[in-house]
Image (cartoon, rainbow, N blue to C red; front, side, top):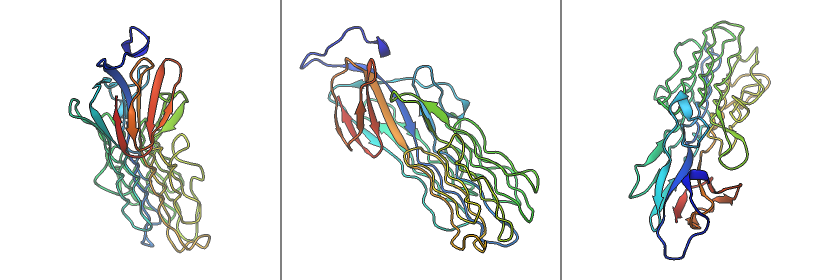
Length: 303
């Protein structure tokens, strides 16, 4: 039986102290938008922190898989789902918001919001730096990787945002186009899904707008549209937003940075666990052997 279950069924009034596997992903950071003519573009946002205890899968930053939680009947556990960093136009991206599982009888599980592009604060995964600098910003141990460095040149690019599974790539020449770090795939819900990709950086100035036109990482991060604007990461992916290029691009005069994707919190218990009551309207599914509660917004769960 999954998660150490020994029998089917649950009797009314009976107490339960059962294992719960989890996936906790924070909101991704927004990309950064470059405002100076001598530095043409800026870094992609870093992915939100990725923490997992799902058997057979990985946790973020190359860390050791975490231990499943032991949850009890009658205890209300608070689920917080972090929003992505939101920014219209600024040379420093906004850090995403933390996601967590908290309760009176457990140690709180917190994933850190992803770092904004060109934001020295770092994050779950770090944001990429603007062109003309080096050393992308750091991620958090066991949650994600650093962002990439930028390059100082007429057509330079910021570094890629870090992801849960790899660093954002560096821009080491005037001709390269850095890409975001990759996220991780989880099947905790019964469907294999990628989360926590970095955001692709902006690239090019007003006379030479080029850049990655595909989504960052495995396909959920933000990207740059080739004409100035950074594109938002996918909702509930925990991925970083795309960096933006100089506003005077002839292809797009409203350049801006892309927002980070909001996070997600998923709890999976054995099918013989008591039915939980919830707030926040999680999606509840029943893949073989399990019951899964996927929170795309904050709420509570009580078994």
